Length: 441
Ligand SMILES: *[C@@H]1O[C@H](CO)[C@@H](O)[C@H](O)[C@H]1NC(C)=O
Ligand SMILES: *[C@@H]1O[C@H](CO)[C@@H](O)[C@H](O)[C@H]1NC(C)=O
Ligand SMILES: *[C@@H]1O[C@H](CO)[C@@H](O)[C@H](O)[C@H]1NC(C)=O
Ligand SMILES: *[C@@H]1O[C@H](CO)[C@@H](O)[C@H](O)[C@H]1NC(C)=O
Ligand SMILES: *[C@@H]1O[C@H](CO)[C@@H](O)[C@H](O)[C@H]1NC(C)=O
Ligand SMILES: *[C@@H]1O[C@H](CO)[C@@H](O)[C@H](O)[C@H]1NC(C)=O
Ligand SMILES: *[C@@H]1O[C@H](CO)[C@@H](O)[C@H](O)[C@H]1NC(C)=O
Image (cartoon, rainbow, N blue to C red; front, side, top):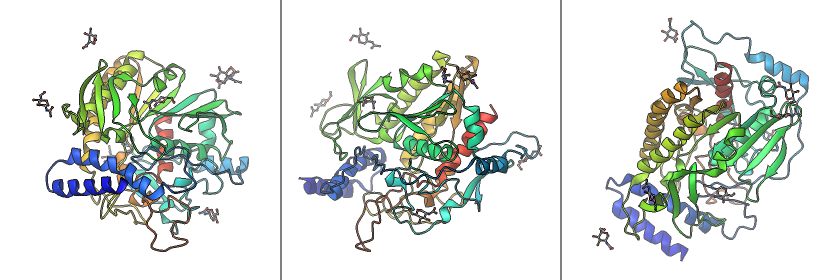
């Protein structure tokens, strides 16, 4: 059954490869990841608690290793490293998101075995990734200096505050980086998780800081019919005009939020508005109008921004742009790999068509929303990590998504992940930027 589906898909792909049906191709390509996943892992004994394909997501945290929380003395040292520096070099405003990755001997402030929050699938060093060069870079905006994330200062600033990262598995990736960095000073304590570990909340008791991860891959209400292996039994039903209560309900109690979305919009879905079917994205068996992902993403993101603007909530809200993947010499399902060991130069990687669509929508809708937000006294910021992430093809797990993938067989066929980020890794720099945006607001 599975083989047959794969075969059919291959001929479909071959037939359409030369036509410009990119968006449809993406829709179909993501359908297949579930199949590939099932093909390779259905007989695996350690099925992870969740795997929300298409993007090889699943939560899997092993029993915490010995945790070495660094001493206050070390923490103070870390605090001294950045924050003496003047921010701008010549008084003009500096674009934090235009810059270069420069060598950084200091590396990460936590290690693969000192942080218990790293998901096994992203714990590249522990899984046996042999090279470590990708750890020794930091983001340097042109024209100003970006201090390193300072966990002591962050925790101090965030006393009694509540944070939430709202989105898909990249948001989960990010929250783990934040928890690891903060836990070098005070260990986070988990106070809540749902059955699937998709919704979780931690507190830093000494600082009364709460950090949550809220699973909401579409930000809008969606019925998703996928099993543990990411195999869908029916198309997603996405309510374009109804925001996901999973974030609107806690919204008013949150002081800081980082929203993100995008990737899940490439999936096959039936689109609803006013509870009636409006059309779909990739539904060849049903006779609905193909509306495309741009339409759907734009509609939802606009509703999200309108909600934020109308609520006049006093919190600080970031919209994080969606991040690119770096499969080379193929896609994730056709032998694509990410084997680079250092950052790329500007221009070496281009966003693929799908990412261009998502990014276009994000920039345009943010631009429109931003003016209205400031008129209404709402703090809304674009957390534009997309361009700097595009320069880090070296920062993904690749084959080191699983423990020692080549231990038994040097040519073993494994799932390659060139989308999520190794921890520690480039995504840690996002917190340098976040800190700077908070300090300068
Ligand atoms: C990663 O962890 C392993 C043991 O789990 C340790 O031997 C290694 O030194 C660590 N690597 C780094 C760069 O911290
Ligand atoms: C400030 O520095 C930036 C980057 O080095 C440069 O582009 C800009 O022209 C400078 N501005 C002034 C007023 O010197
Ligand atoms: C923690 O912060 C919350 C929200 O600001 C506040 O209501 C609560 O009193 C604080 N608790 C303690 C123990 O400081
Ligand atoms: C945090 O909350 C506690 C209890 O409400 C209060 O005593 C304390 O002053 C607050 N600290 C800050 C920095 O807001
Ligand atoms: C919201 O949370 C519920 C309960 O965990 C979950 O079933 C639902 O899929 C979530 N909504 C979205 C849009 O993911
Ligand atoms: C939504 O549906 C209701 C009843 O089904 C209808 O009365 C209403 O006009 C519709 N609204 C829009 C905006 O289409
Ligand atoms: C699909 O819908 C169109 C217009 O609503 C109709 O002309 C066509 O016959 C339908 N096709 C099928 C296979 O139902």
